[in-house]
Image 1 (tube, protein in one colour):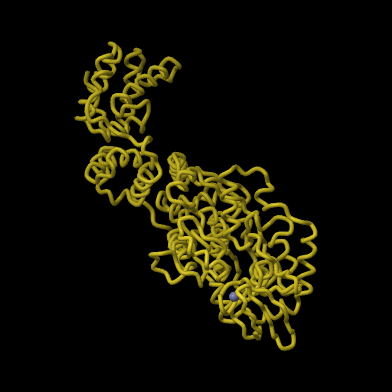
Image 2: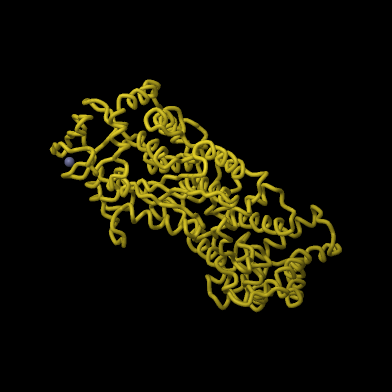
Length: 574
Ligand SMILES: [Zn+2]
């Protein structure tokens, strides 16, 4: 079943990819591809590299076509730098394949690449992303690409000429930097993404001894500080020297420790796998970039075709600065999935065209985002959402394989966040408050509010700064209570008198908005006037001061429910 054939960007790409695949390889499974480099924690921004082809492949699958989404793990790339938080001694491994670098201390995984892949693999499973992972280490070391490597070496003159067309144009900084529109966070994310992508300032194979697109890893030091100094097309004898002092002659037809340089490797794989759709970040899509150069090389050398490759805009993170400083790193998809459910994260990608930038909220904005998501869910259920919104919702909540797990009783995220903020997660107290929220549809157990409850709790405890947390006063503010005027006293009296009859989220909402109406002699169903709004604002500020000692806090009905009737009476009685 197609999600919605007419309206959204996913459907339009699916149309294009199906038609193109029919032209290129009729009757064969359609290939969509992503590439990820496990050179460190895989940045949340890089998830777009996966989600864009995932959504398109999923739509193609929903329409009944055979399709495969390849995720190429670029784990045979060189280790480039020691990330923050890792012991300096890892610098000795710079230049080795990522699968030959020891995992960070304490890791359960056999090497660097496996360690950083593991978290991404877990996140992709939670997100319902169906894919075939291909380890480039396995492909290169098994000799799968030998024929392609020999071909690239034979055609090195042609490749050099293609690269030369772009070399003369010169490059100034990364594509992202040249856009000139990115703010500092986004520029940092762009930089991280570019460094993780395999495209960052890699040498393209040019050396004093000529142009060779193959780069051996040294058989003594395992690093790629090598230079090919001679190659014979007939015998495939290749001689390289290494900065460590080693010199060796190998038979390239049998050699397994080396790889094609990135700008040749990528188009080689397009041809090898028959990729029809593979998007790329702006760092890959600028003039002279690997995507553009690859488009020439794939046809002229490998006899293949460039995939349909939309450029996707960077995904920023709001609240990232705090994250970085506290964790010494960038947020990963696993970090996002600790504060939001998989359908919400999928929705963020599904609802924006790939060329639209957006931010993933780790700050207060996540509450508004969840409200928007819940509103959309209601509209879709009522059939009141437009076609594009309905399609995005359908892509978020499930895949061709079925629906993703949901929270059975999805209470508003901001309500849950406020409650666990106040109860500091105490299960009994949390359940008591959740029961009181809506007596017509009471919560029977915490489990029915999970996993959303756990996400809200994780968000409150890890992302909300201490000064923004809510602390209910233990004792009444005697000073403030002593200074109340008659009007304030009467307002508090009316509120306390109505508590028992209004003890639900809806009831307390009516009550707190109603008290100022009564004081002004207005009917309960009056339209808000400027005078009433002022009176309500002043009354609410008074309540916040008396309950939590600040001007503001969680929504008052939620706060009152959470504080409980006894403590409310204690704190509000002059
Ligand atoms: Zn060496």
